[in-house]
Structures are given as structure tokens and as C-alpha cells.
Image (cartoon, rainbow, N blue to C red):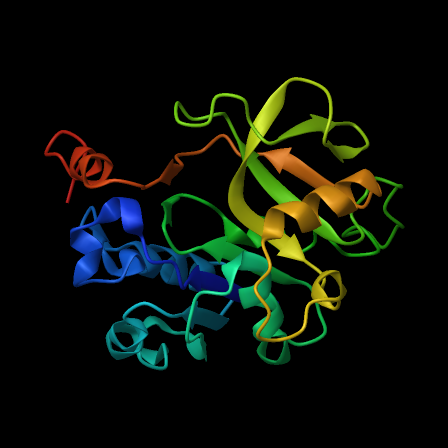
Length: 237
């Protein structure tokens, strides 16, 4: 399984820090945000990665190189202007291949997320060789989190049959997901396309499942949030 790390955003709310540094390279507790992902993916045995970039993208390539020093193999998908999430994924499909792949936002902090849990979410059979029940695992699997203070109404409801656009309680999409490439086949490479409408379309079709991730999760949007996370009482070195 391959992974795609999203790193093309401008990080407007994080200015002025992002005027001179891409948001995924900002350091949290001693290392860049995106490096936390790379190391945790490698730890799970997922070593082939694609990173898209736009704003100050050369700095990302200079900092990470080919990934070999992390035990990874990194390829890059450069965008002249950010194509939004679904557009960026569609542009990189030729690098991601024909199998399901992980997509994770480069500006979230999830130091303890176990990417090995993603490996079998879209498999046709369970680990014992038995067919999965009809639990909506066929096109995408999303990791949800408890609603943060900045997004109290959440995005989707978790049900026994998968994700729903209706119902309660609602949870927030944690910007971690596993997708089949055919989900993005209708988007031409280079087109701008947001992920939200595509998710809602496939959720309405009953084709997306998910689960609630209860570990540490932060979506870093402002310098104050970054400073709080790096404060001495929170930073153990």
C-alpha cells in the first residue's frame, strides 16, 4: 500500500510563519509535522509515498529528498497552484497505482496513529479469508475524530452501515482516509476539485465506511495553536 501526504496548501491562517516556510515543515515537539507522518508510515511498513506541493514546494523537496534517510521512497507531485484535495489526488493517481492508498493531511498532528490499521480496511476478505459483510468498505474508509471546538457540528454520522450525511451524533473527518483510485477517475488531472462533495456523493450511495479515532489529534491552524502544542508542559522533548 502507498500513501499520499497532502502538502500543497498555503496555510493562510498560519501566517506569518508560512510566508517563509511550508506549513507541513513547521516543527511540532521537535520535528516537522510531515516527518511525524513519514516515520509513522515507515513504522507500519508503508514506505512508498507521494507528496503533493505548491507553495514553497522546493523547500519540501529539499528537506525530505527521496525519503531514503527515513527509510522511505518519496515521489513528488508538483502543482503550480493548489488543486484542492480531490484535484491533487487525481493529479497524482499515476504515481499511486491501482491499489487502495492512504491519504493524510500534512498539517495535522497525530503522533500515535497506527497506520498499520489502514492496511486491510478495503480488502474484499478479512484476515481469515472470509468475505467482509456488506459494511460499505468498497470505495473509501475514513477516520473520524471527536468534534474540535472550531467545528462543533461535525461532518458525518457514524452508523452500523457506514457513514451517513444525516443523523446524529456527528463526528469530524480527521483528514485520514483510505481510498480506491476509481473514486477519483472522473476528475481530469490538473482540474481543481474539492474532496467534500465527492465524499458526500459516495456516502449517499452507501459506499464509504469509517471509524472513530480516539487518539491524540490536532489540526493546526494558527500560530497560537502551534505555540500551545510546543509549550514546555506539552513538549517532552
